[in-house]
Length: 362
Ligand SMILES: Nc1nc2c(c(=O)[nH]1)N[C@H]1C(S)=C(S)[C@@H](COP(=O)(O)O)O[C@H]1N2
Ligand SMILES: [Mo]
View (tube, rainbow, N blue to C red):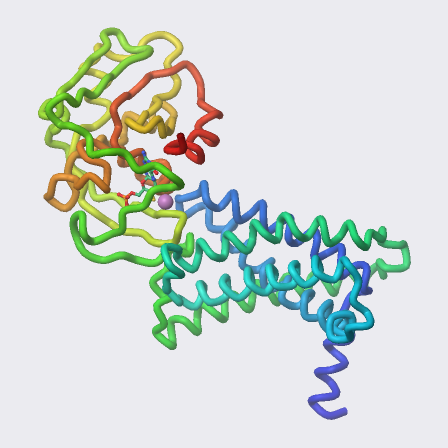
């Protein structure tokens, strides 16, 4: 057998039954949605398996989608086979190719902007589109897998091969990035790319959805420290600007990170100045002038910084002046800007997940 023949035979062997391909794609898209969304909440290096899984599953989707498109291509190219549901099929294919293409390009370090969006944000948009379109597409041609679609040992081997191939491909890609010296080599385990330099101008101003307040008036500004503390405080800015400093890494889910020297006051010192926390205190909520907020467990909060300076410069308005949260190990969206209230609470704050998305809309 020629090399080409052997390769064709291997690809043939690897192809699961059509219904199994379809259901696997459905399951993989769901798994990608879960790993993708969860990855946005993770920022410490020990969380790497989630990011790896997302990439390896993506490679498995490439293979299965290739099988699927080869199988159905005549339904698309032959107008006599067009049905009303064909539009949905095409949309699903476009979203899938878009998500995979932007994902692969991002991994290789392509760092372009599509108007205001980073390539990673475009990838997320395609992913969310897939999440809507794939169930609709599946509903137009719903067929349960049959017993004969699952071929026991062979099916198990096919899927193991796909997942191993996914992991190996991603590993090889990392090596390729290093050898070729492409920008992708500097990415963090989260996929974020570096923004170098010190101070306000070294990294972009990023707001999550619609948060865009007027500059905060420093004269009338007060930082409230309230909730389960012995004595509530209302501090003017110059009492916040204490001498603590820390180098910390800000990693935004739109795909960039920066390491900066932040200066401000340790939250533990603020809580101590308020006479310490009282019974039941378990969490600390940081609230922005816009209503945007995030909550940390009290021990983690004590180590966090309320910063007034970055890289030796006073924070600019865009970066959260006069006071912003610096929460090392947390993703950027949790680093609340324009903080006006520090609230010690007896419990977490599930509503924050919604508030961060809608804050800033009237
Ligand atoms: N109040 C408020 N704080 C916020 C945001 C926001 O939209 N509103 N965006 C967050 C996001 S998504 C990131 S990545 C960081 C970005 O900080 P920067 O604008 O200083 O780069 O701020 C976070 N803090
Ligand atoms: Mo962000």
